[in-house]
Image (tube, rainbow, N blue to C red; front, side, top):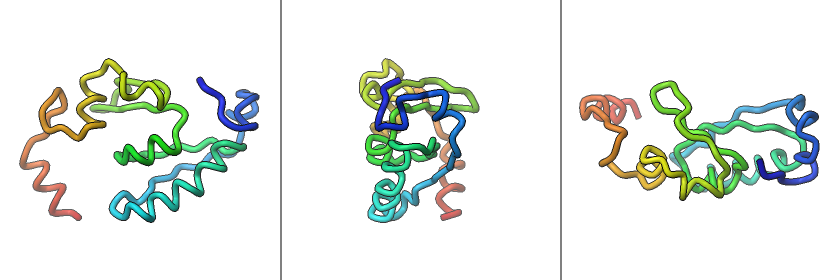
Length: 117
């Protein structure tokens, strides 16, 4: 794991730190980036953060480590620097937003999700 900032030096202390869970509002990109700008200094100093997002710009800006969960299972973990060369068809499909690939979505599920927004 690549250390970032002074708080990342002592991993045992960092793990015992307070934590925060964030979900940047992806529907408003400028607001998401404002939230990112608030997360970065905390994550690089003392606060362990967990963000759940599909916004790859946010991932690249705020993350040290990345995990992808598919059907309730971790299918890939690595550093943000490794994500473009993950070797995972799932990660590749997701980060590039492709319809074709191992992740299949039932069209009725997509319509249902779209009607909830």
